Image (cartoon, rainbow, N blue to C red; front, side):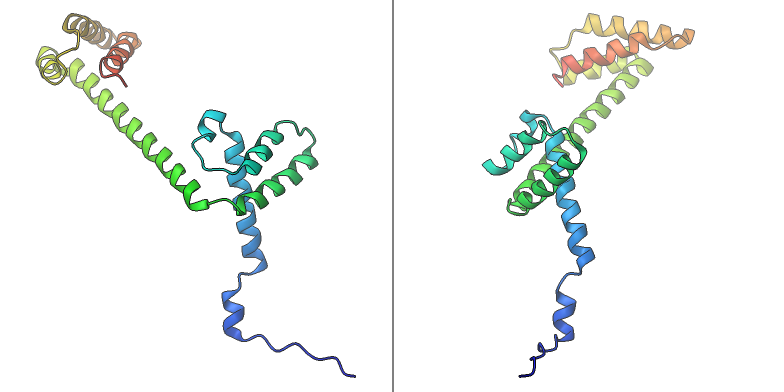
Length: 173
């Protein structure tokens, strides 16, 4: 009896199926995602919707000391991640990125206020006090005078840093 040949695969089907290289890239990406989750502090990781198996695998990683054992375990973590809800995990990463952007924006706003207060003096203090009436005007003016004096004398910006810290505490950032 003759062996039957498999039916020839149509060209369209071959194009839709991912290549072996593409599958490897996806596997490595999932392992990298696992590494990222493992590197996080437990409080940060708690925000992610992870299964119990995945959490156990992440906790187990800290006990593995050998290089080869860790490499195999990371492959296992990558396999487990395939079963997770990747869209939810990506949504948490997106929200973390958005929070970071908001913190950066607030930080830049504080830097602009600090520079404006040092450059403009009392006029800028009045504007700042109008926006933030609970701020301590006397401390603010003293820090501004010290920062201006340091800038004129070319000294390190110690008071400028203190002013920034005071602004951050005043605005509760």
